[in-house]
Amino acid sequence: MTGSRTQRMVRWLFALLLRLTVLLLPTFILLAASLREPAFGNLMLWTGTVFQAAVCFLSFMSRGGWQQPLGPSVITLYLIALTWLWFAKPVDDWYTSLSKGLLLVTPLVVFGFQTLNETGAPRLRRANLLARRLADRKDWPGDLAACLTLPEVKALRAALGPDAAPALALLRDPRPEVRVAALAALEFRKDWRPGQAELVLQVAQSAEQPLIRAAAVTALGNLDDRVLVELLAQFLHDTSREVRRAAAEALLWDTDRRWSWIRFAVRRVLADPLFFNDGPLLADGQALCDEAVKDLTAWCAEKGHLAARAAQTLAAHYHRRLSDNLDQKTIAALRAQLADPHTPSGLRLELGKLLQHFQELDAPLLERLLEPSNPATLRLIACETLLTEQTDELLHNRAVSALRDLARLPNREIALATANVVQRRLGVDLGLGLGLPLPPVHSRQAAEITRRVLQWSMQNDEEDLEASSPQPVRL
Image (cartoon, rainbow, N blue to C red; front, side, top):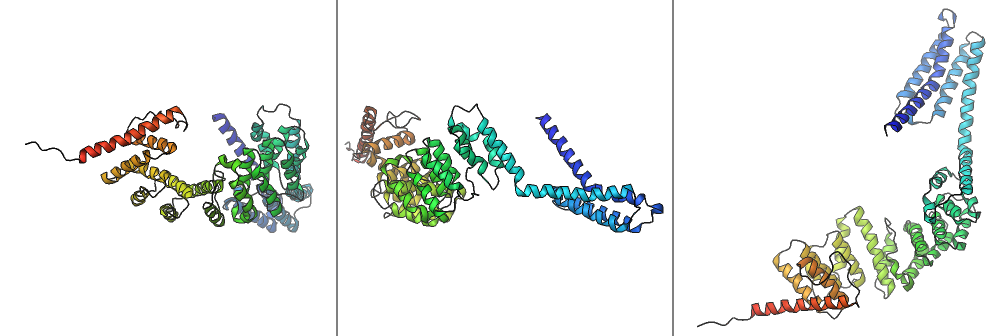
């Protein structure tokens, strides 16, 4: 660690010394020419030397001057020195001729290198070299996904300039490792020349390996062409879950501009029962535009898988917003939706889980959610929240009473969830494993736990009945 720090310090000092030498050289040339004049008689040459030194000093002292490129400063300082040397007319000898040649050739060379760099030729040459190294590579990782993070891939991504041709040339290679590496280097690329994006789309449509299709879809995540975006949206229905997730990430990051293009494709995939287990459509860290939120909220009122996945996607959107900023206005709007009985039940459930996660369920709202008119899952969330937080005795007793009602429902799934809350929050052993998931609904263990939680609810009723019955009076 110390050795690498020393090496960086040495390189920094060398670069600093080189920069100072190059920028101060014109001043020293003028100073030497002034000293060579007989009896220091060339006033214009001395004036030029002082002026040149002042310009260098201001260049060094200017804010951000050390971070500026060296080329423009070299061209300016050398041409100024050449002008002073030309009009001062010093002694015409070998030194004057050499100085004029040096002050003229140096900015021309720097200008040539600067122009060459602006054309992108060195960058293109480096990209071609890196692409050739990938094509010639023999030892590839056994896992195809590991090819996405190779150092050569990162270097090629950084070297690619306005032209993606070096990476696109690798797509003709029959080896899937080479094609995956090339597509990874094009990840979320912005600059596409005519026909290049269509070529990557053809690779995505024809590739057999899901990872290649996913990498090609990710490469096209910055497209602006509506036709190509609509074709890209077809991958939301791909047979591979990995490709579907890549398509959602590539399409939904910019819903402000694209939502009207992909709206029907999104609705179709949310309603498809084959993809119900995919969960929310949004990838981590993504958010939706207002128009998309309105459409998803409307879809939550429909039936089937569309309503469930639309609610999950909205919950993922609000989770992102609240993670970024616990905006009280947004929280108040979500509480109002949750409390409204006209809100679709699936959306209310997701909002209840979300607000419980962020601990934004206040006591009045929890008290309303305990009412029997609410769905059982929402009542269970309210019970667990009230039993977890420090509440008054009245709300605590109401939560326990609601748990008894839920335990008597003829639904084994609700009974298992109720047993989980009773065991964790009330300390009643009902046979659940600590830290383990709930048993399958149709298992023998689930039947036994259901019997126990029902028995618990009846025992509490018997105790209350005994406590409330009049006691005989002894004479």
